[in-house]
Length: 78
Image (tube, rainbow, N blue to C red):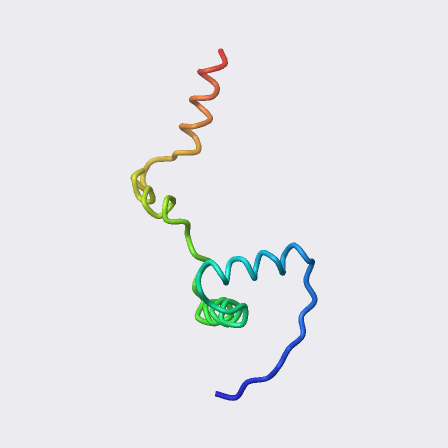
């Protein structure tokens, strides 16, 4: 694979976050960016937090959760 060098200007807080995230996951910032770009090319969505993944699918798809929520709020504040 042929590689090329790229200079990217980011807000300092974003760069510090990227460095910290990469360090915590034992990868380089280059690997972090490469993995993200690969996911974009493959059409994969951003990673889902494990807690969200754990509770996904608990509500049956035929239930209109939004309507039920607003109905609950309306009844709560009567």
